[in-house]
Amino acid sequence: MFAVDTNVLVYAHFDRYPQHAKARRFCADRLLSGDEWCMGWQVVYEYLRITTHPRVHETPLSLSTALDDLRPYLEADNCHILDHTPLHYRVLLDIAGDAPAIAGNLIHDAHYAALLREHGVHTLYTADRDFARFGFLKVIDPTA
Image 1 (cartoon, rainbow, N blue to C red):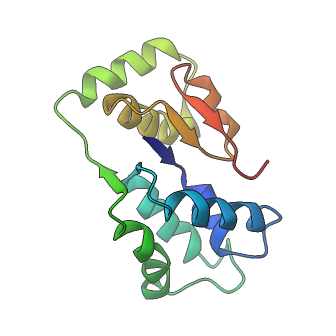
Image 2: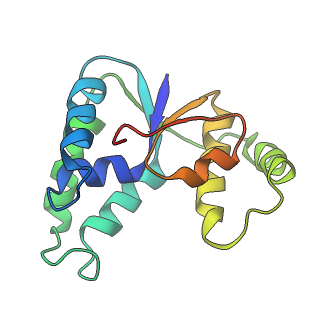
């Protein structure tokens, strides 16, 4: 099973990004194809925050439209939404020990990395190179 990061979903749904065509093809080919994949709730909420934000998009989406964009993924049988388990704090401590320089804006990435590690997910599709800091993750940019 692999995971997907927010930026891939954003690029897939907005044609203003140069990564749009590749991200859209990736989402159609991998996320809706039957391959088992996952994401955390934080990816859902980050997608909603970015796509409805007037400082990010000249014409932001309404919350309803942004949720409609996510519906095919969230309702797909092959999509698994990861929740924290009682082990989360221990895994976060391990992540902090493995990458002690993580701070500030990278804390959000550490949170997602800890959630993925907690669930045994080792492959992340993202255009965010910062995830390479987490040695257990195989980071693949589907828009490259």
